[in-house]
Length: 56
Image 1 (cartoon, one colour):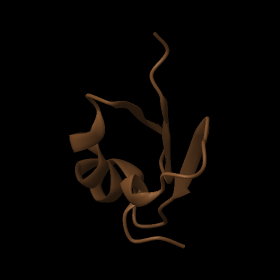
Image 2: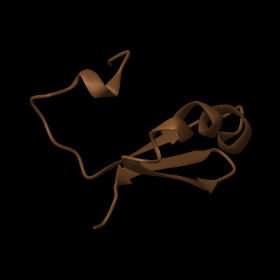
Image 3: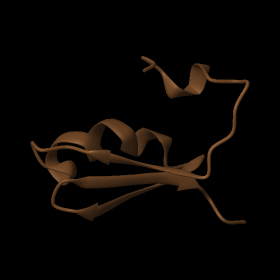
């Protein structure tokens, strides 16, 4: 568990999914949308938020 995913420099990821029982669109997405310039941030269901590399 890490406080800031941007601090991870020695590993790679393709995608990760957050489960937010409080509601991904109203709770998690507002926090992570600031990373949309660098990453794809997508509400994928009522409690799911997907974060992945942008396909270029």
